[in-house]
Amino acid sequence: MSIHINADKSAVADKVLLPGDPLRAKYIADTFLEDAKCYNTVRNMFGFTGTYKGKRVSIQGTGMGMPSMSIYANELMADFGVKTVIRIGTCGSIHPDIRLRDVLAAVGASTDSNMNHDRFGSISYAPTANFELMLRASEAAHNLGIPIKFGNVFTSDKFYDDRLEEKTGLMREYGVMAVEMETAELYTLAAKYGVSALSLLTVSYSLVTNELTTTEEREKTFNDMIRIALEII
Ligand code: HPA
Image 1 (cartoon, protein in one colour):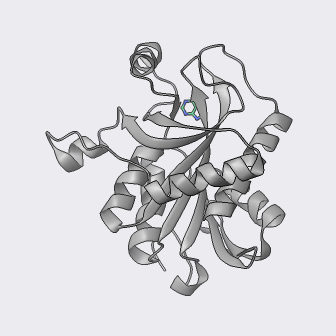
Image 2 (cartoon, protein in one colour):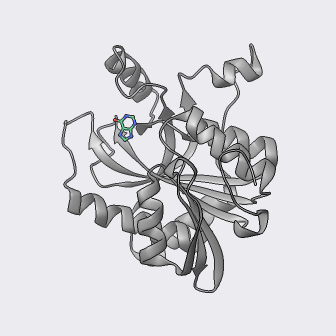
């Protein structure tokens, strides 16, 4: 039991998928898991536990942005003792090599957030993914015939940012693939608590071409990413 997750410790598996949208958590539980049970409804931030190919897995919504992700990740890691977390989310491409519907894996996360300045002071900490999970994601994507790209992402505090072009332009110059809003905090907390973490992302929007995926395309590419996540967790 924690402040935002009203469940017994035993109700949550030690491997958790983290979609931002709680209704996505329900969709994944309904579509991919067996015997899924909802363990949390606080603030409608649903969490479910079930099995996938016999493995016990939980799916917990995190909300949007680092402060919200930070609440759920902290409680899962510190209070529920989870050992493996995989974010499954969407992102906007900021690089011409990254196309709409691509599945990405975040090796590291650059950020404009103050959260790590507040933690580390003058040190610029580098939040990174777990290497083992990256290897497994590469192998699973290959076996499933789903192309996957590995690289840096930009975890931004603002979706609507007056300096968006300036910041994403600078990130693009340094090879950053896409912008999203949660990974830097997830990876930092995972390091603090000794948890294995990976962010998988599908490109739902291109800031390079201004193309947007349709609802059906979003569902198909999201399902591809979920399959990879469930295979490796
Ligand atoms: N910006 C920030 N986060 C996002 C975006 C975006 O364009 N698309 C999906 N998540």
